[in-house]
Image 1 (cartoon, one colour):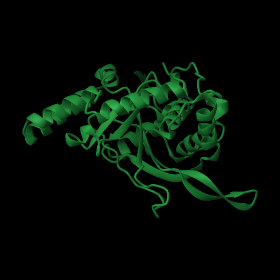
Image 2: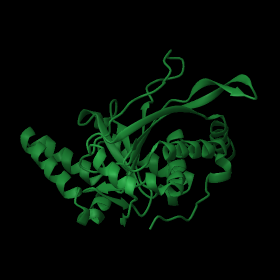
Image 3: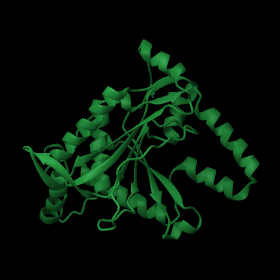
Image 4: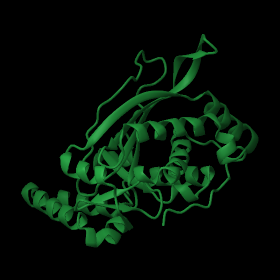
Length: 288
């Protein structure tokens, strides 16, 4: 990772905000009609069933190339720019083979800014299957979980604190990224809210953990649900994607966060233009 020289206001905010509570939440709904039609065309024309999660991962890869400030990691009060866009994605294990050992796991999708939508979709499906079989791939989570199963709680607590101190050391930035090559999260906590359940997802306030590795932001989504949009001054029911954006205010402010959300919405309005009619378009990008 590359050390970033921040401006004066960012340095002030680094001291102003508590390192334990630096996150701000924004909620909204995105018109998902164009994306839904695009996913259906991919399945009809190419026989490929692409998930909403994969489409979001691909879109976030492109968004964070355009807004690299939102894809950074803070180590010891210093800001670093990762070489690519990686996504940390929680995986529900309840009801699956791995659920008896753990309720939740975490997978990491590397370099989503350098992959096609269909490549991301294939990798995502394979990774989810592995996680739900009880085979977590993330080394940090795998080792922490293994130790937690075998050691007393106080020892696990102190070990976790020691790991956090190591990974918060600016001189070990390369190790931090190698162990967890993601600075942005994507989760779907509203997946249990099914259409017709009588429940509509509206908003959420989330405080992200800052140990053992800092995360710049998290995008939380729910199931696609019908919402009323004003189209040419008239109400129209369209499929919508509820979304919560939790971001570290020390890295970006509300204006930039708003631009991130607007750009994400624009990509989802014109998915074929950005990901290709066949879902195979790749943008050669780098944040080195």
